[in-house]
Image (cartoon, rainbow, N blue to C red):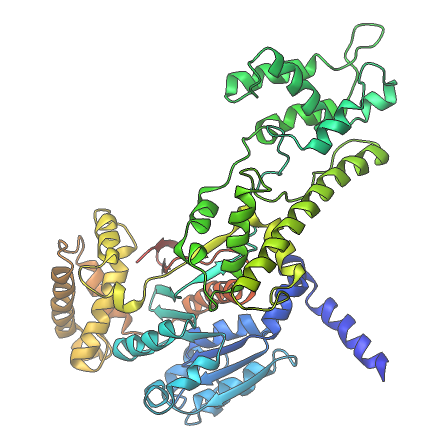
Length: 537
């Protein structure tokens, strides 16, 4: 009986191998436990789900009260001509489920308006809700309910050649932000006691040729820094000129052969190359300082999340055991060295990281006890991950749509700042808002009917002017925006829907796995110029 289970696990690891390298087993587990809700199985909506089903989300539900129409078949690869007249939610669900037999799906043949009126609590059962092709009034009602319930909402839209995406989340905390250009946590400006003791036990002058060539460059940097400090008031090199001089000091340590030619010592070359990054001052990043100073960190309650409890423990650690520093990450880079000395050096950093983590764990348990929670409410592996990534913690807080749509909001200031650029994608945001305003007045989108394009242009221009007046902004720099939007007739082009489906799925995975940093909070894509921009509205 055990053999099939083992085989299934092996198959799953092989199936998801590449993505497991990105977000690990724990990220995949969160993905497989996620319950995704899609409102409206439009071309964009099904493309988003496709890109979530393939990596193995747990389950999805499509809420859509529409029947399949001819235009749906024309732009949606998950619908066929035989589907016309059938439930769009049901047909899309059946075809999407064929992509991955690890995923379960469900179709709800009701409109979002019916769900909001009869059973709004149902929407709170999902990990995240994705919305496409929803009119503004319903969208605002839905957003308010989810925002109050701390359920993330992702609004995605393909409108002709324009793509739009808006993330609405009250608060999203990230431990594994996984920055691309993170420097190693070596702390040579504030060397570890273990490093000092180990480096002082090694005598470069007394070493054999092989020992000299295989001394880890971290040891070289420490020893030559000590020499540098003797003539520089105990300070490490800080600017370009000083670092250049320090590199020259390192070069002077390379041994020469009997002909006076410097030996080929790769460890010294590595040390010289590492100067610019390894000597960066050890400090708490401003984003992390903002987190430990955040009211959510300083004012804990029994309702506080694990993230904020660990953040408070981190704050206490910095003020006490850490001596103003974050917990050590505990990893060192690869380097030219013999195995014995590399492992010895590696263990110094690992041991300090373990000691720091134990101190943070103790403080987490004390805080949990003070809040009336069990000391094992937060597992040791969670705390270890938190400590390891403490320099990269992030918190995303997005404005609600209600706040954004307020004429005197901070969002309007952001729009105003970008309004001066006549080629800014922000104008398409204005146009999409105007299209929604047009719909609210006339119950159809501009350009829907070919014989009304000219009159729709006049009506749309009035809507645009009204929105700009509410925001106390100037006029549109180009009349082409109005003509272009009317030309679209609110159609979804599959190429744009496919692109937006990929971008949106990526953001959903960030939210679900709590890894990488989601955008904050509005994304616009212009397929005509193949340009995009992000705005904090």
